Length: 478
Image (cartoon, rainbow, N blue to C red; front, side):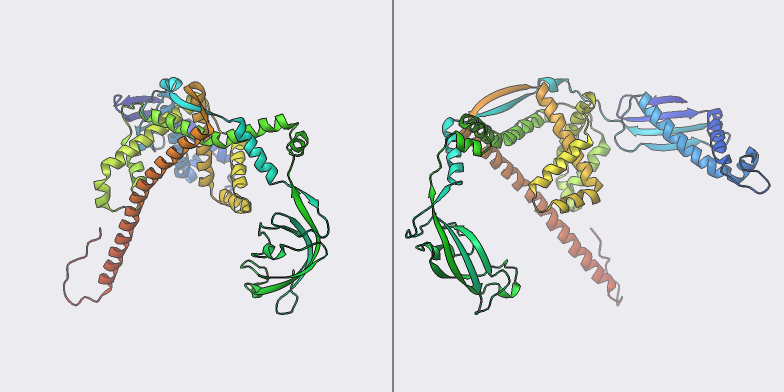
């Protein structure tokens, strides 16, 4: 194989590739040997059909397969040997070809530009560590203790108050009739939380142990028996016990009940928990800073075909007029996106960053945990949409690249308080909201344009469907 590269200065290159007929014939012979054993022709034993007979019978088909194979192998080899990474699908122009002939073709390719990634090793960004005050940790522990009260039974003549735990048996009726689920045993209610039925708790304030109380409540919208929804039910309640909440003592035993070694260990765990609540969001701000710095890196030339594809994606659904008006803005945005992608990809390749199946599955599991009750729907979505799984792989790949850049870069480490962290995140959220508003305005314009285009198309169809009474001007489609 002989390869000549032309247009060496720009990104658009032509590779003239020549393969002599001897090489082509060797491919042909190899294919004939392959099919000889499986061909059955009258008058010949299996595997004994002469090559000349095979050529007459299958020559055209064999040559087609061989040509396809040779083009794929030689074009890939030519690109690899000349260290050319194509931006998109190369175009192939056959010059000479045929059985027992030399093969000559031109491979026209747009090359991905060379990008500089050395500066990424010195990239600067802010790295935050949130210092959690002991008072914040103590406050969180007190909240936990408040939500895990100890209840102690009171004397039989003590009346239940808000915050007390009341245990009861009940039988309910609607219009004097029992219904499915109308009976409950040892039901426990913390008065004031209103977790059973709206207004139910309130009617139990003042009850004592062994009291019987009729409570009326409306059955909710999500009640299983549809015909009883919004109907008033009477609950005949037998009070089994009344318990008063005792303040939980925050000590080593309390800590052990929560899985810590002791109170000191619990404080360390809670402090870390509060820090982690801010860590992910602050880490994302650091990565956004890195991406902004990457945008500043200069790339001499970006392939026009990639810009065109990205502009199409950005302007999808817009009219030609609006695309023309915003063309410059779209092109700049497209160049930034492409440049960032090229730099990140080059860094990933140079540092041999790869995504394993285990990492993909871990990310899927993470999403499942974020959507409790919808796990099957999420799994089905990824199983039925390979493109969604590929997109997820891309997200994990980019995350790994950014983490690697962070490790190699120069972090401006900042110790901040919880209040400072909240202030930084609030400002970042405001900026993100402003950016989203801009994007939404563009999307609204797209939708308005699309609707308008549909209306015009509909009007055009109506005009065309009318019988031709007289000559009219043609309705042009925009």
